[in-house]
Amino acid sequence: MTELDSGAQGPEDAPTRLGATSADATQPALPTPETKTPAASPAPRRWRWWAATRWTIVVVFLAFCGFLAGTMGSVLMVASSGAGDAVLARPTSGRFAFPLQLKDRVNVLIIGIDQTLDERRRLLTIARSDTMVLATFDPHRRYAGFLSIPRDTRAQIRGRRTQKINAAYAYGGTRMTIAAVEDLVPVRVHYYVKLGADSFARLIDAVGDVTVDVEKDMNYRDSWAGLEIDLKKGRQRLDGHNAMAYARFRHDALGDIGRARRQQQVIQALFARMRDPDTIWRAPQVLEAISRSTETNLRPHEMLALAWFMKNRGGSTAVTTTLPGRFGPIYWEPVPTEIRAMVLDMFYGLKADVAAETSVEVINESGVPGVARLLCERIQALGFRVTRIAAGERVSGKSLFVERRGKPIYAGALRDYLGAGSVVSAAPPSGPNGAEPVADITVYAARDFGHIGQARQETRANSGRVNTP
Image (cartoon, rainbow, N blue to C red; front, side, top):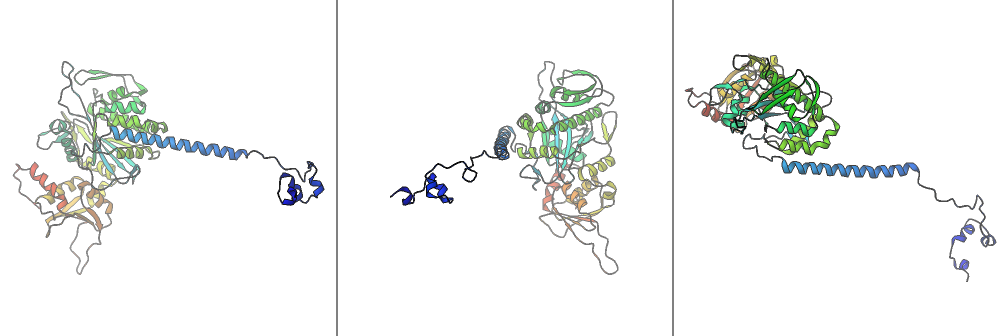
């Protein structure tokens, strides 16, 4: 039996299956259009381009993931992880979310510490705060603001006499400095960052210098503070050492106020530099610079979230200002009415005239005498009008802010400033012959405000004042 009879099919059988005779099958097939088999053609060029692009994307993505992993590893190795919690308790409500997301407004006090040298250029252990900047980051308004507090500002330091606010650090370190700032400015500090003498210079070097318009020639040397300044007038790139020297210069007619303005100028230049696309590749150096000689209660991922927020705010710039005040013989004299208006606008996005017309009553349900009176003082410091304080008929565990006339944002600002409780809305009471007037906002101060009353009793133990609700 031949292979054909057996049913086996080889390459020569193809013409038969196409309709050719058996005789034709024994002859070589002619290259006719009907019988010619097309040769395999290469893949279209666009498919080859897509394959190359696809693998390029995969490689770049893996490299980027490796870079991020290395960055986070570097951060976790060098950054402080909870070391500052003993100084300032972190907010109980989550203000950050994964990944690198800012959920709610946060206020961060940045404290720069000076260094003093003796005649032999030995570092002395006594230090004062050289820089104080209160920053706010608000994701709802896509807003960032920086308030410079001159170190010569007159302030009442707890347990001490009235003096310059930078002395608070010498008396009680970071904790006392935060308390002095909160007593001066009606803003609750959620987080803090304490920078060593060279931390700021390292940060600028890490981002790759900053561009600053130096307004005049500056030449000054302070051997006690280890400060040397030699700058020429004009727009120029400054490294960390020269940028820090420019920001610290204060030997002109404006003194500490001119220094605060130069600090703001360098801050603006720093954030402008951080918005450059290539800065992301410097993230490990930036985070390492921040962590060295730095103390904070911020977590590494929270610092990254704030940096990411600043980088992705669009075209708007950060708002910078100086604490409102007047020149005095010794101090920068703060002006409370101007401070209130500035704080309501900058930190809360509220109008001072509306806050002044908003009536508030405080009911003490904490079981601790004096809580209502202290809350009343703080509410008035923020610019609201307190119409009544009273002792409650019961003791409650959680404070409540009840707003009745469509002002939940103002009630929320009070809650955020006072630091406890939740906000609810309710309709104004009504009844025959007219109801008794009720305040726009009622604060039911519960046990979660008890620590305020205890602090009040400690700070005023020798004042002779009688306890009030």
